[in-house]
Image 1 (spheres, helix red, strand yellow):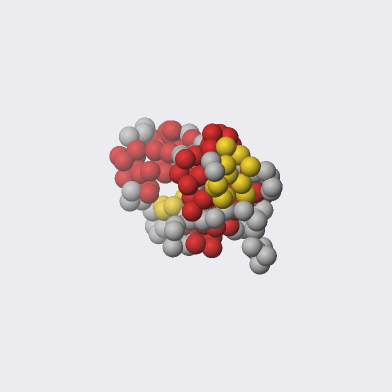
Image 2 (spheres, rainbow, N blue to C red):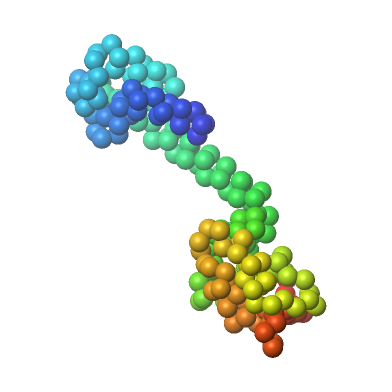
Length: 184
């Protein structure tokens, strides 16, 4: 069963009631009927469907349980898909989880200086051209799209770029500081 198939199964309110009843400890037909509040024909049909698709498995005489193996496999597939999508979305592993496209979704903690510097350097190099100078309003305006997620506002981001010497400020103008020779 794929994560999409699992989602479709649980989108059906009757199947979801059966799933919930079993997940909460009901294991016999009568317990499942009582916990789900469904009538016998409706519950029997749903139990049969969930048994055929492998979500419910026999757990002793007259008892059913959720298939832990199937649930684990679905979760692993979903996690792998998420990781692949994340990698496709952000090929640079150093930026994953921090930058999505041209939006800052999170910033590494101050204790993680190297990672923080890499993320902010990436943003600055994608936003400003070497050798050009910008007034404060322009810098803030150019940084605003990076702040759509709300992880940081443009003024705080500008301050962080100056504090880490990624942008320099002189006489009211800002410019991109050259990357260190050993930077990746």
